[in-house]
Length: 50
Image (cartoon, rainbow, N blue to C red; front, top):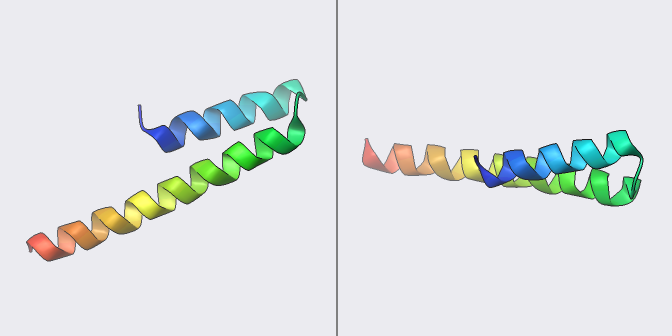
C-alpha cells in the first residue's frame, strides 16, 4: 500500500473519531502532497523513457 494512501486513511480515521482534528487534517494534506509529488515524478520519469 502506498505511503500517501496510508497517510490519508489515518488522517480520515482521526477526523472521523474527532481525536486530534488538527493532526488528522495535517496527515490528509501530507498524504495529498506526497500523492501529487509522486504523480509528477512518475510522469517526468515516464517522459524521459520515451
